[in-house]
Length: 261
Image 1 (spheres, one colour):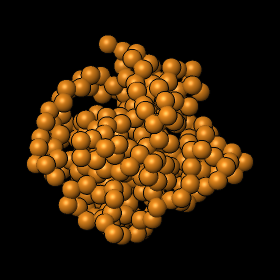
Image 2: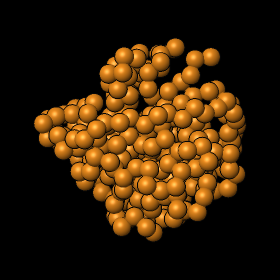
Image 3: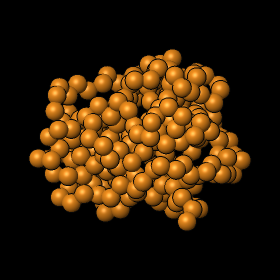
């Protein structure tokens, strides 16, 4: 059966396995008591990096289409959300391997959106997402955390570069050629020119956007490539799609935040 989450003509990587949600937690992980090991140690949150304004050109291999997106100022975390950080907020430990410093994986788009709201409340901020059943809208003027748009993600990934990557792949990313078949602690590969790490490799990252909703309905965009992927999937322009409920052991996310005009 074809991989339901692979976009364009890129072959699906071997070695990935779907992660089934564990019982006892709506976010797809174990209970707070079982998450103790992932939450142990000091929970030092990364300092978000200020980005923009600017313009980025997106392209889609399937449709052979390109389009420009103007961006306002925003903040983006320098690394993906870790297992420690996720467990400290949700009490859940959904990742395939327990390591507090690795990126959380096995999280759906819905899990990521709910985490953004929960983390915002914990920080005393106004949640960005209004959730009504299967409908999600963005609260105007909310100062909380959110997922980046794919335009924000690619702008951040490129960091002013114009090639397929912001550096030599083996130096900037954990991918099939050097990962050993698993994810690695965040921030252990070289950052790009703007101080952002793991935008390529380690785990794919959820973005807020739909992926061509006229064709794929509720499917959302994933970016960046993961530890199981070949080099051609770890490029700044590569887009992937997945159903928002799908969980797998090479998909995570990072946090963004809007900057008031």
